[in-house]
Image 1 (cartoon, rainbow, N blue to C red):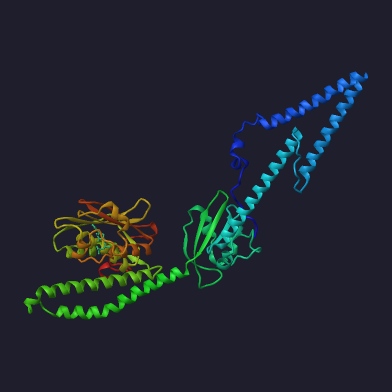
Image 2: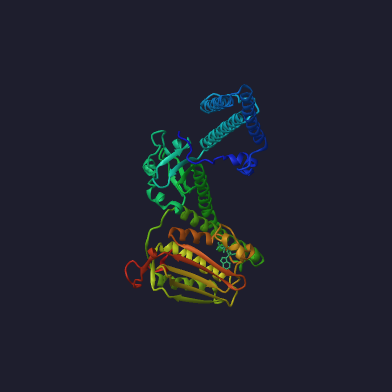
Length: 474
Ligand code: ADP
């Protein structure tokens, strides 16, 4: 495998901060004294040559000979330095005190430091590579501009089928062909993780893919094997679905018999019978909601049909009034004049959950308003507003979790299962819609379902074919 493309570098100033702080124009004392020593020795030699020249009466000749000798010596030292620099083998610096020996020592020291730095960098590189290779996740370094593979670890061979050296430098989308990644890669920084994709190497392996832009020019494509996780998730789903399914029949029987027992015939058992009926009703509702959730979770999409919203809104209003039994005012605002595209049955179940919640969590005398309106982007929003208890801000992010309740006692008293908003979230997800919640304690709440423009249809006449009234929804 080739080297990793981008590694941290170690600069000299990182290693010798003290050296970096020394001003460049000033010579360290040790060097200065060596330089002075050499200068003095040369001046001394020239002086001695002059004295000797005077003594023998040939000052010029002796001085010239001394100067030539000195020049020859300098050249010889320069040659040694150059030889030392060019030599691959390690050479001990000279032991003298002069400037040339100091230069020798300095060169020797900087070469030794450079070698040590190189060794450290190589060790770091090996450690990085070993760490990347030891990762159980496939890691692929991709050049951002060309979208070609620069490097990949060993796991990429097992999970993505990349082969070294064949796929080095090849376009990543082509190498991972069955995954159809071209559009995903084009999204770049905005690419959402792919949560479940089939591995190109083995149809039984499921992968989670992420694109991480870690520098201007490089991306990391990380693929994680999530087969076991998805399998466990499936086991959990199956378990909940099976338990709910198995409980359904015995509960129906118990509930049926309890219904047959008229408390008026057994006045002394009345409180017990009424409580038993209430609880069996609650359990039946719980099982039904769990089955609904399992059904929704098992689907990737829903059958689509035009949803007649005028009929749907009328049904919701009727249901709210029936549920409220005259304790609340229910208002309807149909401002959109459009229909939706989706599953009438599931949308009815989601909207109905919001409406019954609004009635349940609003004290008598309050108002529940159901509004259908268009949004500026051409979409539509169905909002259910109430003047009820409201919800503290801290609870809002967790409200759609299963069995999350702001007040368990209030929820149970009003017959809640804790699954209603979870069902709403799933239904909206299957319609690429989202739920927004705004609430103030003591003032009320607004739960709004936002649909994109692709879900909006011009309203059909209620009698027109295909416009199934929501009241028919199961
Ligand atoms: P539940 O069956 O308990 O109502 P949901 O999932 O429908 O379960 O709602 C979760 C929790 O959110 C409820 O227990 C309640 O505390 C809170 N909640 C939902 N709707 C409203 C609302 N309109 N006003 C105040 N609280 C609400």
